Amino acid sequence: KFQISLSPEVIKNIDEPEIRQQYLPTKEELEIQEEELNDPIGDEKFTPVKGITHRYPDRVLLKPLHTCNVYCRFCFRREKVGQADEILKQDELENALNYIREHQEVWEVILTGGDPLSLSADKLASILDQLEAIDHVKVIRIHTRIPLVAPEKISDKLLEVLDREKALYIILHCNSHKELSDNVRAGIKKLSRAGIPLLSQSVLLKNINDSVEKLEKLFRSLVEIRVRPYYLHHPDLAQGTSHFRVSLEKGRQVTSELRKSLSGIAQPLYVLDVPGGLGKVPAGKEFIQAKDDKAWKIQTIHDTFVDYQDYL
Image (cartoon, rainbow, N blue to C red; front, side, top):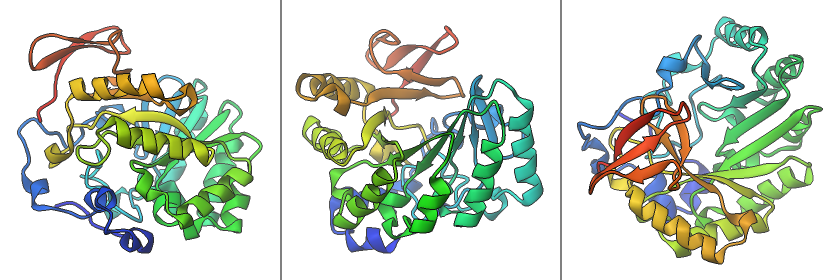
């Protein structure tokens, strides 16, 4: 039902539980709960053309492909990743780029998918060239796992492709300090020395990083290699992922404790992506309040209020 792929770097470190649990499938994934969704963050309703998600006014997601070198067992796009018909054909890519050209309000384009750095250097260069040529696009962001799972792909050719006049940021998806092997650190160092701003996003995952000690080690390790922690995501209601989920209450307790011991530069924003395409909200008290023992009242970015339940 769900794609499986392991890279040599992941296989080499597969004995580490924090790595093994992220990539090796288990029978628990087949236990799909009634409340789980095949589009947990509501991409589909904000997809005006194939390959584009336009949820926020000033930025869009551009998804040229849905393949990765590895497939995270908790992925919120797990129904789509690895599907051949999800890769944009040339005319579909042109339609997606035309959408960006026609929408003057788009200030930032976020390349995601799939993993954009799984593209060939020439293909990636072509996409970046076309985005740079759009005057109203000022910022390009690339979300990737490649430096963590296939650091050998951080080649001189790739660094040359990523050298841009417009602001280009790379967001690394990293959930445990155990992922930061010597090879991975060397690949990330190449990106840093090339002058590319590096941030990270992580997912709060049961038995992988759901403690103050593990998150503190992760975020300190990232800052030490010049990667600024950006987002800590509350796990989504993706199908077959209940064994990874942590309660919102625990997430808030852990992140509150981190504020007592971590430098501000090492603290990401803990966020919840509200189901149904209602966007990310900070998981603090100003946006999320307890309603009863099980439910939470969420204030969305649209200043509406919805109920949310963990479904552990």
